[in-house]
Amino acid sequence: MTFRKNFPLVCIIGLVQFFFSCQPLPEDDTTKASDKKYSIQEAFTIVAKENDVARTLYTKAIVGEGKKKGLKFDEDWEKDHIEAGPLPALFLRGIASDIRKRKEVPLGLFLGSDFPIRKSNKFTGKQAELFAEMRNDEEPKFFYDEENQLYTAMFPDFASANACVSCHNKHPETTKSDWKLGDIQGATTWTYPEDSVSFNELQEIIMAYRNGASSTFQKYIDKTKTFKDNDVPVVGDDWPKKGYQLPEPTIFLDSVGELASEETLNAILKI
Image 1: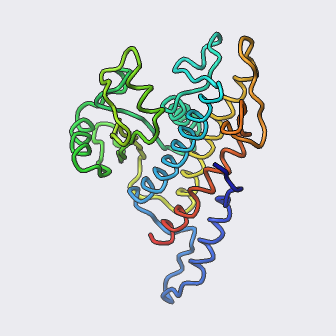
Image 2 (image 1 turned 135 degrees about the vertical axis):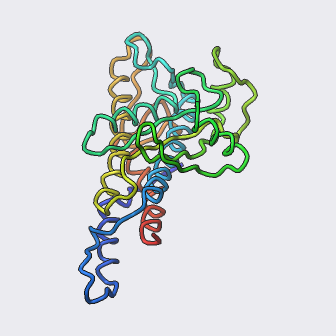
Image 3 (image 1 turned 90 degrees about the vertical axis):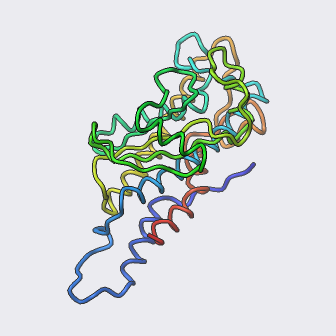
């Protein structure tokens, strides 16, 4: 598995602005590209795709291939005595935590399920009802959370790699031990306080997610430098597939961008 340098988000922004600047507008329409509005459903769909790409890349290229080369991953990876990296679900939790810290972007992210390993991640109420529907039609669900006054979207979280299946089936606290590849194991839930966003706000949402992914991966790299009982993996240009090593966080994020940016651009232009 090889990855090229990414098509940076800044290039997407430039192309989109150029696209809109070339479109004929009514004489009385002074709206600029940066003032274009997107429904929150459209924004959720775009950032959810970014998440799918990053999670799949991390699960397959880091966790899956890394385990084959001797790298370890653990749900308690942040504890001082654990010499391991975050499991895919914990990688997502790290991203969500980083996004929460960026208070200028009021985006929420949560991973839940009807069969979670941690009871706190079990869907209840409206989310439980919609997730039951999702198991049947595998379609995203959008609704307004009256209690918290937040626009909400749920996207199916599929078991995209064997690492997802084996980890959940073998976990000592699992409430379901017969997961199969391709199953819907849960759903990523996104929240936002407004029903629409500007072009600039959409850009901020995408960057908040990408920065969260980069920051969480950097925390993993920093953790490896404290290893005492296990060898410290080499960090550089190469991926675990080639040995006991990890890519630099910038390379990881570049690859997420390379895999996601074309679809993100197409989605923005189509909208």
